[in-house]
Length: 276
Ligand SMILES: Cc1cc2nc3c(=O)[nH]c(=O)nc-3n(C[C@H](O)[C@H](O)[C@H](O)COP(=O)(O)OP(=O)(O)OC[C@H]3O[C@@H](n4cnc5c(N)ncnc54)[C@H](O)[C@@H]3O)c2cc1C
Image (cartoon, rainbow, N blue to C red; front, side):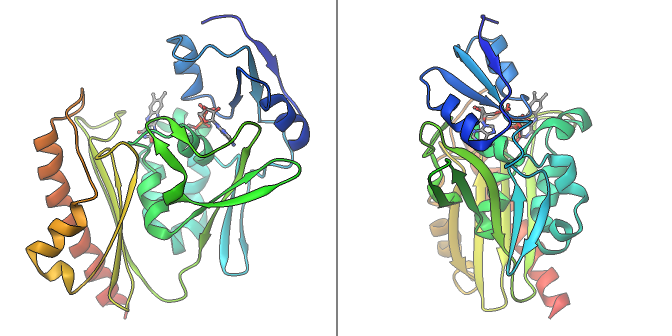
């Protein structure tokens, strides 16, 4: 690790001003950042700890027809929250497989997105549910659809000084079917080789979020009718571009993607049928 200055601001304004400086970086749970610091993959002059910023909520609230997940909410809270479990089960399932208990008690949802790993486990569910990232500076707030948030491996549309203060999800007005699937090399702590979430609504629309099969997490949409044919599945999966890396080969990823997408679709369809 190299030397850096450490600041723990109390307000969003203070934190944002500090993060406008070149070579500054935000620290939330630190589960990605500390690894990067240790490996000298990042060498910031200033680390800005967000844990005392009271304007960044730690809670999960229903606000009208949306669920608002505060920027400091950790994975373990997501897995226990009744609103997430009821309306967004695929997100609860994704949060439950992140790392270990210790990691889930520190790792924030916002940090998982801002780290922008193509394999970020919560991203497929957030994409499929149509989530929005709320990015704030004292003077401005932007609502960014998750599908527009990632620009490449490790990069996002966030500008200097912008802090993710919340993630919002539209509460489905009707019963929907959902499924989450994840392939790893082994049981226990490992990043996904392939992950996906599938959301189906009674009007016949299907939304899939895919992880670890492209440079960013990816969204693809289709219909039940299209997915009744092999061509429909090929069109759906055409957004993906799996590569070979330390976790899996491209061919294996492609094969797993086909199998698990169809299984997730089947599981979500059965769920939807049983509920309607
Ligand atoms: C042992 C281990 C196992 C893991 N297993 C998994 C796994 O199975 N699945 C998975 O998806 N991830 C896994 N991770 C990665 C990690 O836990 C997650 O990505 C985590 O959610 C990051 O959140 P954090 O709060 O720790 O972020 P930090 O490490 O504090 O920050 C990550 C990045 O996001 C930025 N950032 C954080 N919060 C904000 C904010 N509010 N606004 C703007 N920028 C911000 C930081 O500047 C930094 O660049 C694992 C990590 C470890 C160490």
